Length: 204
Image (cartoon, rainbow, N blue to C red; front, side, top):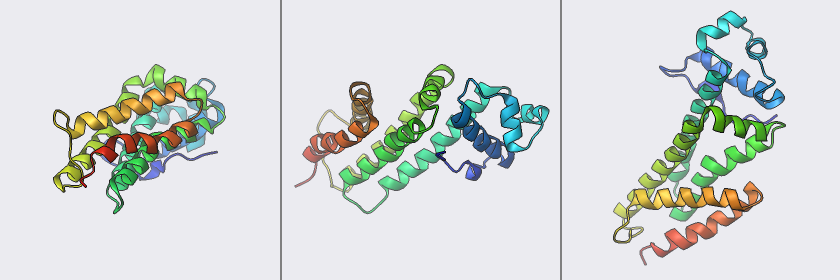
């Protein structure tokens, strides 16, 4: 079973240690049995709680799923920012960020026995969080592009902005996902997309 994130480190004002452990147990249960077959009893047993104790932290199964999405999204955002902060050429940093923010989570979910169902569940119960996930990746890329422009590494064309370019990159990748057969084909196309966009903006 693939472990997509280390949720035990997600401990802040909105997610204490117990909630983090519940989310990790829920992830393990969802990928093992699928969302539909998983019950609150299954999750309670996986984390070592009674069912009433589980309800203290989460209202129901969709609430747990949304909490899981939020925790995964935040940890992914941190990894994306880390990729963009490395001492590498800009296109390589953005490629790594897109891999961490989009390709890797997609691949890891699909590798599980119930990946397709979990994607359907995300659209049913957490469509807004999926959009927020893409927006978080987009914002981090926009910040990196603006830093590169401020450092005279790239020149942003007139009429565009770092935010617009980052948004178009995310839109292009989302379009690739709908047209290509596998996420691996999307990953192979990303360097070409970046060469076409960022390559034309490099300061010579």
